[in-house]
Image 1 (cartoon, one colour):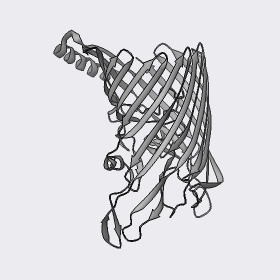
Image 2 (cartoon, one colour; image 1 turned 180 degrees about the vertical axis):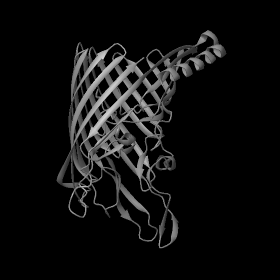
Image 3 (spheres, one colour; image 1 turned 90 degrees about the vertical axis):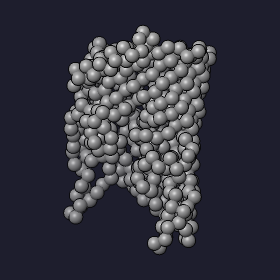
Image 4 (tube, one colour; image 1 turned 30 degrees about the horizontal axis):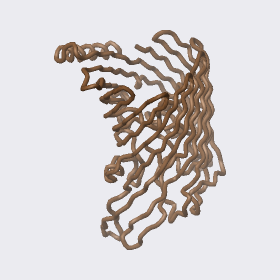
Length: 406
């Protein structure tokens, strides 16, 4: 597989160099990755369990036995990837560059198919840059957990790559970021499930503004995100169709800090997350009012408090610890019905703790991780959109990974 990747990349590079001459420089990189995992019960997940979220609620059968208390596990190489960084000729005073990165994640439930991870062009001036294309969501940012699980801390940590226009200005250790973000592979939830249509019909891109400060081995910062969606453009009441004008707008904020020096890396992030289902987090929105004649609805976003911390130590042998906690804060408004659209809308709180150990050599990484996750489920309070958590379920998860990096 790796040989096929390299041959294909070499062919593309040769064709590009022949066409563009010496004004362009290329650097290929990638990994061959194999993941073996085990869970003690059924879970909310994607990629057939590779991207892990949290344990499912108890589902009693006719005899009272839990249908979700079923161990599962598998082995995949879907996150083998190949990328190319390109440096091009200057445009005025700006240096130009581009990135294309792909893996075999596929789309939806179609696995082992090539998929674009990142694809963008960038202009760099002294002290500023402009990026156009698909890359990591600004809420993912430069501070993320270093863990073996491919979810990289989700649903405690925002996880998404998205098309965007991003401008960044830096001076004296301070970096200001502004971005307009759309959706492609990671989508918002709504009445029709997860779909691009809610943002498409909104005609208003997701917006982000943030600030970072770097000094020595420290990085600290904060950001604000605004998302405005159109859940529906038409309704149906007693067999009659009506055009409706619906919109739900949410505001999220985050703060982060990281220390990286010597053998240590310590990082943490906290969020007040509002309807961030497109970033692989718990959230969504509920119905607060219904027009009985046209069926038009008003909505309020669900808010969650989310915090994680991660510590890693070492160089060749590298142990690490991870902890995360999410609390459902509700809508802050009374709900007109029990209709909620989102992820984990029946979860009152979620906690996870993990420990890992990796062995690192040049171009090689072998690691093992154990994580325990617990989710608290309960009844929805229509008065404020919170979940009165009355029962908890837990999952034991183990991961073994082998990576060859080039």
